[in-house]
Length: 288
Image 1 (cartoon, one colour):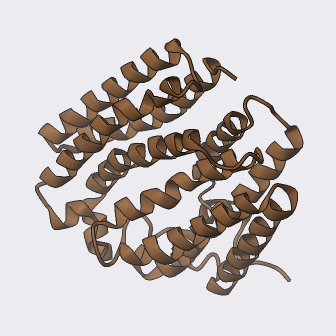
Image 2: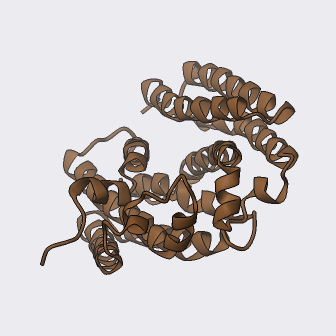
Image 3: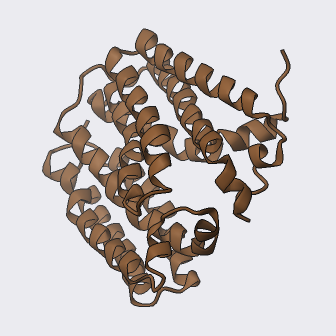
């Protein structure tokens, strides 16, 4: 059996660039969940299983939204709207990746990682994706499966989930909201044209997007310092997290004060720098 499309089409369909951020973050959580103990075999199995399940979520999302993607200039050249990849092939690979990915995590790691990855697929593909047509609250809902890869990584160590797992989940959850509000503002016309109920579409002034972004960025400051409070990281991380979170908040406040595309891009790029820098600092100043 031959599949339609070329390798680049399938890379695009799986949103591989997102995996490049999710996998290192999950590996960091695996290391913390294991109290600083690292197993290369477990790490490899985590990356394989998480990549399969995350890719499945992304493909199912695009299968469901193919009609929307056709209407939006930003997405109309994706593999499914253009027909470079056939719908039947996308469905087949999505289901295979889901089944194999969940089974892989169950067999080679533990049932908790498999269950969390299954929850991630269901929430992202079958709850968040349909909600994008219904309510602006979809962004809040979508931040849950967006943060679940960290819990999959943490659970991969085999010690279950604890309060530190919740802290890491909350950091990513809060980080996502200013990040995605900035994206929604930059592409607000596309989302309206596609029929998606994103916040900037129902609030054309952007006041609500700016205000909510500030709220979540403020909440991120104390939450980002919790790893030190709970003994997982040291003072260097504490002051570094405070400084970076404060700088991120400043970028978000500027966007909230005047919703210009340039300021939304600043928030977007600040968020892209912030998250890996925060996790890297946590690893470097870890107490494990």
